[in-house]
Length: 339
Image (cartoon, rainbow, N blue to C red):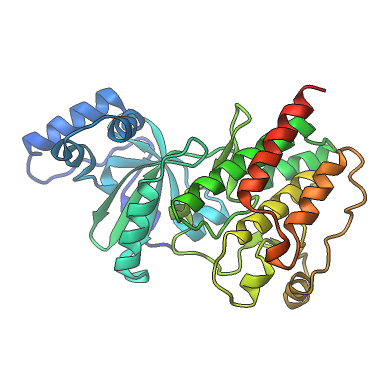
């Protein structure tokens, strides 16, 4: 089922595993004391913002073990089981974190190392942070900050209650997604899994993009969103990617259009329901068949429909750039809030 099963951790809610090995070194004791007093999040912040010596950074982030985390509940969602993600508690500072387990044998070690370095160095207020990562045996443990309810779940809740997102919040969310995508493009980092499942909304109404390491190795190459009941939900892949073309920044514009459509109409632009032919849906995307209901956005201004249509143009050359969308959503966010 996963690289590391729950039983392999020897974790219990009321019982902390106590090693029978030799006493810890002085360095490890020092590291534990620092982390216990600072907390994993402050260690991350200090590592990013303070000119700390490399030896100190190595001291604070090395020699971690799966045994230093306690599993919090075994009723895991489908996504957590598929991607080997465990809600845990750090035994050092008592903080709640996510522990991602990657089997080294299941992926190329060179590409994994590159991916770990790249996504650990990502520092943006709207992207989930990697607090640290470590290697133990044939597995890599990646410690991440937990993420709130996804946009997919939010849309599901809104659809059940019949509530619509306020338009100023819609533009704020889309603007922050543009900000994130623009940051990644400038750093030449590709996040191929942009969808309502990989974006969350915090309690302060801010977007949080899930760190790509959560979905490594990737479950799919076609960015197909699967619902909680293990049924297909929607497809977010751009037509040129279906044709096998290499990534281009305009694919991010397509992804933004799919997310915008879902927030406006409370359903995926390219739905894949039970019994529907996936090849027919993919064929519609490639042939430029527009998603349904585009004339029914009475609750929102025409700007919302125009943005969706411009992003979902089958020819990538006709789509706006993420930078263009960044300034457009910023302007619409300000003007909408002033009404």
